[in-house]
Length: 592
Ligand code: ADP
Ligand code: MG
View (cartoon, rainbow, N blue to C red):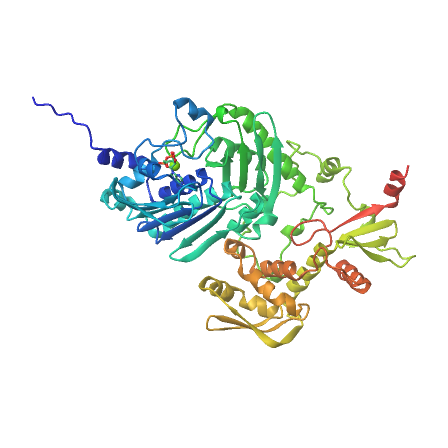
């Protein structure tokens, strides 16, 4: 029999290997973004046409490649990141296998341009089916641009496996989120079909999360941080009442790399136990810094799973720190134990019959430091928060704080943040912004049913151009806006504002409408709660007195009066406490 074994040509071997690394357009996005990060870029642009099958391009301002390096980069096992197998245990870069570019080059057509700082000119390459078809020099900024065209053009079987454009784009966005969340210090932009999907300035982790998932996200986050000998862990969990029905907001990063870890996910879930209902998933953004020697990231070709040497310890730390942070958050003074203001029926729903069950349930008596609470809630609450500033129950009747009668209450402003007033037995220190949010929130809610909001006509109507998405959003909000004292009309693509609630001043209008219309990710929120309630919160936040606003004595007094006329005085619409008291006894104790 004749010999039958032959070595596969490189391009076939590369095509086969490519299948492992590049499953879909999103895999290309991930690899290119990670290479840009590894190249120390501070600014990265991602351009995608459609769902990435025709074009994915990543442009970075990183270190670039020399003319020789750039030719090598597209060979299999070509990497600048490790030299020997031992290096695998001290990986600090994203890539290390040297497979990505070779794989992409095997199944697409590439235009590459790259320049290192030391060279005058950039190298420009065209590559198709693993072959460099053209190499020239050109003028370009320092850094690298790689455009990947017609992905899977020579592997039709793969192309046929791709899902709908919508699904593939979703995968791309997910990959983009993961890299962008891991590197908030890097500036990112993402254009799809020439329109901007994301523009993320360099910022903190928290701001990056908000920039990606919507401005409202920031208020939903509870911070946590723990430094141990095993690892440094910091990040945020999403407040239990904002848990979602999907796992879309669950992120672990290890040494700035997004990973999936069912095991660590379990630890966080365990900490949330009792706080959220079945079928809802806690949200978290957790960043773990750990010695690369104590992890193995080499067990999965696409590198989203890793092995930890001290898995058990990590589990315990993560669970307990999450519980602790949730406990701190629960420390908001809920004085009336039978009633959680969050669970109150929004005013505009009070007269309606419930049509569906509420989505989310929060156990308000949950005490994360106690396994099984058999005590009435008050006992556990007292021990938990003893020593914290909580108003004396004797000062509170119903929901009203009784001001001193013998002496007229005095007011003054402190640090441009608090309004301080006297009570019968001490001082009351009110956060001006939160108190005013509460006042406005209740006013707007009432206006939904009573339609009693005074409206003022604008001498010069304001016009705002709306995007398609914003027009859709507007149609859902129009009725509530009218009830709340706005006179608005859609004319073509323009929103024309001719009247606003009288409590709104001219300067606030534009910002207010900006706030109303920036909430892509919060559409879900609009759907799931009552729209009126959502709007009332939004308006209250946007129009309220802010920290640093200087208030006249009359304004301070009016705020205090309005505030005490509120139905609820303990927490602002965003669930933060509004005031603390300083009692005579406390003062005496301090002076002892
Ligand atoms: P790996 O990232 O695993 O090393 P890749 O195939 O992704 O393998 O890249 C091969 C090499 O090409 C990298 O090691 C790096 O030296 C170089 N490279 C790739 N992308 C860039 C880039 N955007 N800027 C600078 N160098 C790059
Ligand atoms: Mg790489």
